[in-house]
Amino acid sequence: MNGAGDVTVVVTTHNALATLPSTAACLRALRGVAKVIVVDSGSSDGTPELAATLLPGARIEALASNVGPCVTRNIGLAAAETARVLFVDDDMGFEADIVERLSMELDAHPDCVAAGPTIVFDDRPDAIQYAGGRMHFGGLPHLYSLGEKPDPTASPRRVDVLTAGCLLVSRAAALDVGGFDERFFYLAEDVDFALRLRHRGHQLLLVAGLVVRNVGGSAALSLKDAEYPARRVELHSRNRWMLIGRDFDGWTIFALSPALLLYEAAWAAFATITGHLVPYLRGKARAVGALREKSVLRRRRKIVSDRKLIGAPKMTFTRTALAQGGADAGATALDGSLRLMWTCLRGLVQ
Image (cartoon, rainbow, N blue to C red; front, side, top):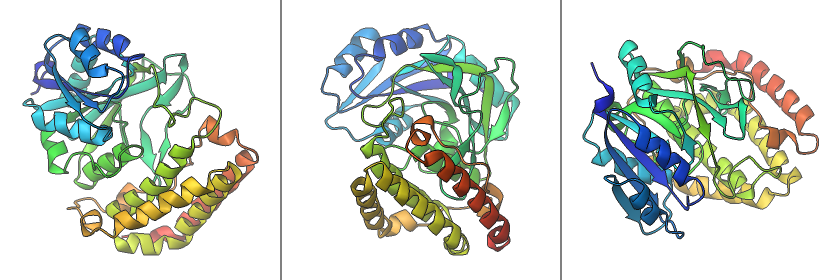
């Protein structure tokens, strides 16, 4: 049995002067933690120095450039010497017992190798931002309970996807799948990580009654603003193809190609409507370049097949996306069409 003392906390930071003080206060109050490792991704505002002041005794790793959260998490994962690692972003707020509660639930569910809480925005505590997800064959998950009120009495449940913004994971299981794929940089990297764990036969646990707060958001990438960010369009365009190309079998992609082409056409239309066609096309060009690398297309060891892990749950659309002109009607039509196509094509997926 593992306990809270078997946990290393890995904090990834980047230009976090505004949010790190509140997160650091939460970190200082944590109980039963063996070590805190802060890995900074090329901050230019003095974040590493602030972290050293706010978190005495923590190990601080300051990287020369912004290489993204996948690299910082992997550095912390490699440096940890405990059975479990808690990944935390620099803009999270949580209670002192979070490590104990997540550890207790993993102990109670031995088939699960990762556990995460329900996450709400700090300025909207009655609206869920993340509460796990169900994997959609289109490459991105359906997010459970998005925008709904969190329930502190909710029971833990198994999910396909958990966000890495606050995630307790078995170090051995994470290393077995190669950690986070550093080519993703940002966006969908935790979906890819979760899918690789699931393909290895592991389960993921949402501790639904445990609620934490997302205090901030990544500059030029967050969906907290009314305008859909161009940089996010580019990364979405690139990373979804990356995920499908590396995590789905070739036959799965071929069998679902009509539905995947429809999905892609809808996203191209959305990018055009929002004035982000160039970032969308740039993302596709970068995806093609990345997918030509043999290492990206290398098939992972799979115990669980694609057919058992993907489906066509109701698609999740953020408020920012639906705020664009005509997006609501288009989203409804796309969701219905893809679900119908999945019904027709799922028998071909192995």
